[in-house]
Amino acid sequence: MQYDYLIVGSGLFGAVFAHEATAAGKKCLVVERRDHIGGNIYTEDIEGVCVHVYGAHIFHTKRKHVWEYVNRFAEFNHYINSPIARYGNETYNLPFNMNTFSRLWGVFTPEEAKAKIAEEVRAAGITEPRNVEEQALASVGRTVYEKLIKGYTEKQWGRDAKDLPAFILKRVPVRFTYDNNYFNDPYQGIPVGGYTPIIEKLLSGSDVLLSTDFFDRPELKTKAEKIVYTGPIDRYFDYCLGALEYRSLRFETKVYDTDNFQGNAVVNYTERAVPYTRSIEHKHFAFGTQPKTVVSYEYPEKWTKGAEPYYPVNDERNTMLAKEYFGLAEKEKNLILGGRLASYRYYDMDAVIDEALGVAHAELGGSK
Image (cartoon, rainbow, N blue to C red; front, side, top):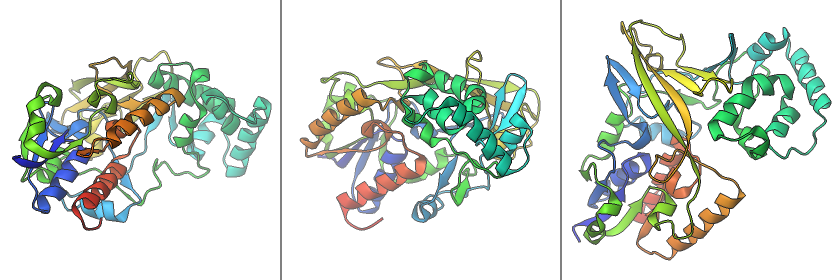
């Protein structure tokens, strides 16, 4: 055995584990299917703008130890996520807050906004929501639902809102303040220079193979005592129990000969007729003043085998199937799973880092 750990995937989980293992005196081989490190947080320079190639990644956390950890590898700026939603020729602030309600109804006070929402909720008459549409109507009423939730959510998941489970909407914050800060977390920002330099530092000391598909190289398993796997859990077991479902994304990135295209880093498009869910003007993550700007358009797509999986579809059928795969993984004593795809659940970046530190220190000894 040449290595202690063969790490499949160079995203956050794999890179953090590799760093901790290397610091503990272990030898790691990291294999990455793509031609670059970093997984979905990979950033690159286009026209002097740091571009989030696989969609916006805004770091935010309540975990002080995670914030202190990432600041060991980069300086973070003071970017605060304040997206806006566009519905036709109307624009609204997100998360749903007093600025939103004032634009919708002309109200000024929280009491007025609460009364308007309560009026619409009563009119809906839903006490036990069974799907996304009913969940929205029972929580924020018809106006917010039809203008700001319905179209976006249906595009994101490729299904009618009536066919989506209600729990999807529980991530959407509603506030009765004039505060456009999307996250309540005390620690927020974007790393100066992007995320790729962080991954480079985390992987320092590890051997890395790019453009290498783990499943095309079975001999790699003989090179390490243990495998740390961060890819899709069903793919590891060759879909022997059936394929899990995901949603995929396609990105269209354009360079515009202007210094400011949309005036905000993140704009959500909430009409079903607009094919993309959001546009990202990357320079605003870093308060850029470059003469040109780069904008990425995010198109949700149906996932098929071979496509890039982004979001697990955590309905009852897929949740049960994932548990069966986890049962198979438990029988493999030299296998360690981690990250969004191997765990088949959505993770924010701070949660991935926290999990990776916990797994690494349980494996290697020590504490987070």
